[in-house]
Image (cartoon, rainbow over all chains, first blue to last red; front, side):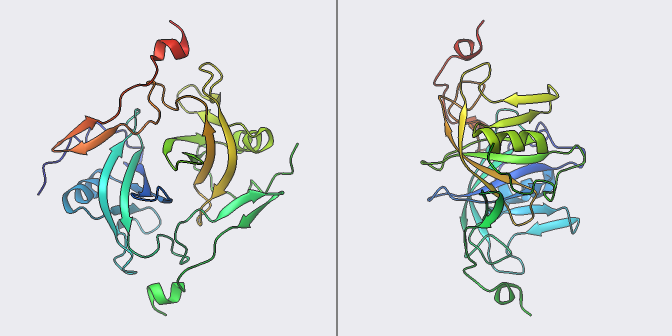
Length: 129
Length: 129
């Protein structure tokens, strides 16, 4: 296991979580934002594969475990306030559960939220029927 | 005032806040993450200049109001879960209060958090002595 940096000094919220932005390392595309706790961050740093904490399922979320769309982690960065992480990743396939490459596909335009990108993969193909 | 999209259906947290990632629109650099409430998001969309909610000062934070480092907003995007915003901005000067261009200047390397970028501007110059 790789030696870990100090993870206790990060500022986690009341639920023990810290937001983690995932950015495609070579294109700069912001893929998604999810949450980590200290244990999932330690696992991510140790394995080099992104592991989040799912707030809806209340358990570790090893990104890609059911869809195969894993994120290989190239770097883990921390901001000035130590309360936000930026992960530079290499996304296998697509990041979004809708089958889109990234999750930010709604854009404020002319008074509504317009869908600006289409799915690349059928979600049923990602998760099975 | 520009017509606003539906802001009530966004998923704000218990404090009425939603995280907003600011990304430089032309280079893809992730500059910072801050928080907005519905009112600051409405102001941002109306004025085209980023207005956040400061959790530490508990008031509106019109980015650049004291430093001059304003963010002109090119687009406001929302993710699939409607609980995270991505702002494509044109950052005047630097985004970070330390004088660095972006806030993510610490990187996990060899068991510690290494500083990977230097300030471009003396913070005292930004905020006065």
